[in-house]
Length: 372
Image (cartoon, rainbow, N blue to C red; front, side, top):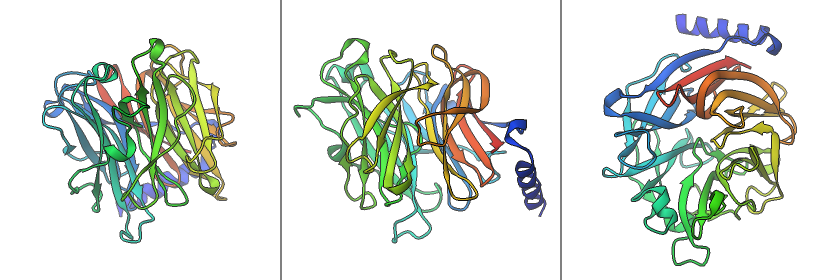
């Protein structure tokens, strides 16, 4: 009863406080460097279950913060809106090599699972990104599924051959990575996972990279690839559904030449791209970002976007809003003024937005929440 009473007070407070007053941000530490034998935690991803439980995934890196090495995907959950978190569990590992880029998404439209099924896509690698770009190694794509909010998981399913173009394909895809951050489900039921790859030998300025996505219309029995984004250097991506089955992607410019996020929109759910542009309202220091849809009380959607609001440094983590499907953006609020890098947005409830993010030089992953 006390928890319910506190929640009702918080919802009333959120409703009464105008956005201009900027209701306070609360924080909880989710992962801390050195915890449970992991030297570093990176690459946060978060989803909310149908019952309201929050599931916060990350890469647990055993020997340091480097991308390649002994890396597991770990999970903590919260049943009180992010105020406190469970003990850690390991959900994916790869025999002392890399298991990373956690990309969770709920399939809420599969009639075989009326309570929803949690899907977690991830990558494994047997060599560093640099070596894979040179053609020496392999990055694979897998998914696991849970019917009990992350308590137990299915055996891994390898979908690499459906979503990758391995040598000696003429396209010559080499490096490969999901998202990272949460995936999305479109109104059609399509499971949509942003991704990126390098094509051919390495080029200066990382111009061998291109963003793309893969999707499933049959609840992950089969997958198809979207066309690649026609922008050399497009890289890590995040996506949000648009009305009518469309999708918007926000993309990291690995070359750094734009100094801002890239946007790509598809009215066909990724079957082709209608337009791609540089979003100058979203400056970015070559980092990851997150997209989320928030539905207002009248049902109309607002897009939310988080990333470091700085062209040079990974700091000043900021949430912005768009009312015109990503054409323009305005600041909602700065979440964290200090060092902050990768982030992932989640709807905590109908009044609160949550952000899971790397902070303080990758020493911690924090969860922040505020009224919207």
